[in-house]
Image (tube, rainbow, N blue to C red; front, side, top):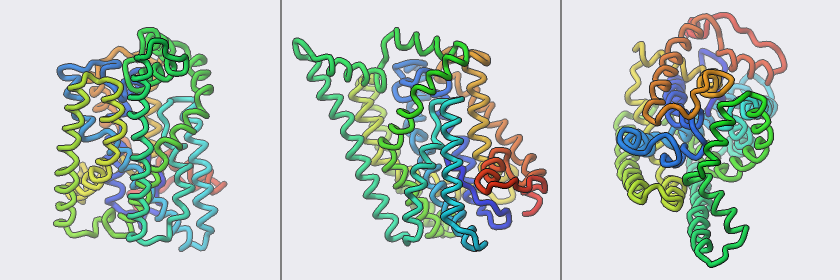
Length: 421
């Protein structure tokens, strides 16, 4: 999630806030499954929550337009915002390295606390780790950043392509008269991650998330290191590639709205013109094969990595084209983006309270389609509270806390960020 936002109000770039606002709202379309259902349902709708009728339609829409694309937008914006923070620190005579790495240190701690105390799907710790690496590319011009980013994404494609290959070889090994214990374990792990977990696994997951908080906390503590490490190793190359593309897009003027509108339209046509048909084909392939482990591993994990960069650029271009400076809706979405850190963590607080056992205990009780009533309600809250808050305060509450910790002193809070613009 991109929450590495520039601090000074007069220097803010409105298009970045607008794109960030759409992204922080859009990411909930996918994250809602991770809040409300067993983990396997995030990747495979056959695992839980319904995969026929309207539930199938919801899965297909999300897969084609949202899955991975909003995360990619966040990564683009994180790279761009990181550059702005570094440049402004330099302009103020501060040490850009000290400012950057202090922010990444505290962001990592926020992420670990978020992961352990609240929700397994945290992305903040991952962004902090990758952001430390992205620092070393900050001075490169766009014509160097883009090819490096594409190489990183190509390496990610090679990495994730090993998943369906491993699934296939495991399926073959399972057909042997006496498969080894290691083969059986690997087969069960794939079923758990990409297929339909056993009834006992689902039952245990439901009991854990509907149960008391101490048991859930103990589970998150146990998995914290594995989750952080696996995320960094499995998608770190892709995330770094997206951050570098975000830097290039900022330096080229793309993310600031400096391009001619015909150029944005061209990228919308290219990105969606290639990405949507390819994503539709993959969705048809996955569903047509009955959401098997191999179909999901190939069609939802490996091949979309090739498509996502084009779709992400298309999304950013479309948002810039649709933004209407001065309109009430644009102002509210931009305010939500300006407080993306607070809205991201606030979403977790709301959703875990709704779904987990220490709150209302709705975990596993709503279908895939029904969950979007919650999504729309949370969107409304984001749009309703963000702008009024910024009319009275300089930062969102978590933005203020992060900034104060990174600078080791309390930052001024009152004053109204929007009132100065």
